[in-house]
Length: 151
Image (cartoon, rainbow, N blue to C red; front, side, top):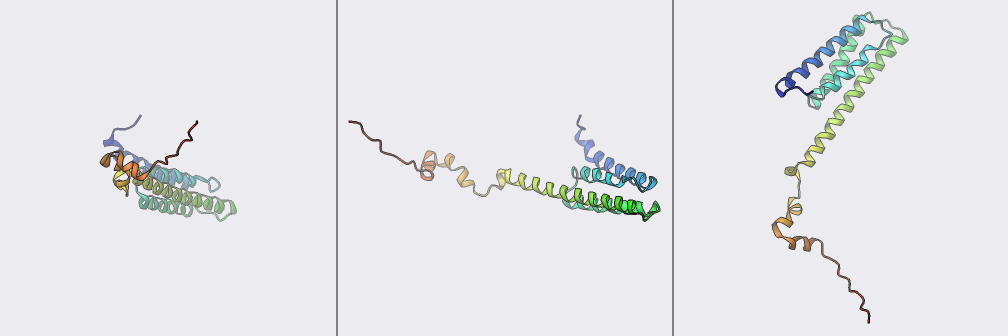
């Protein structure tokens, strides 16, 4: 069920921020062997719905900072498991942000190319309507083949 437009403008950013805060708290209070920070990937993916590419990059950076801050606050034991989980989470957040920006850029390019106002050669596209069939015959001359006559 979709929300009405007047609610969706502010509910999704609010839910995304609440999710980031919940993930931060959960990551801070759980043991370092549990990679909770990887859930920030969901925050990055939610932010694509209401932010442009630059905003998604800022959210990605913010999630990385929150993961690092949580690691430091929680005591950040410097064991191989804790550091590896932290690095895996950081890389997952970064990759999700990169792919989200690439996807948004591709969608933006697709929307621009599908918009008739951005079609560069409209004269080629609409020449049949303006010139009738004459314009089509000039562009695509038919190749007339002579048929062999049977005696």
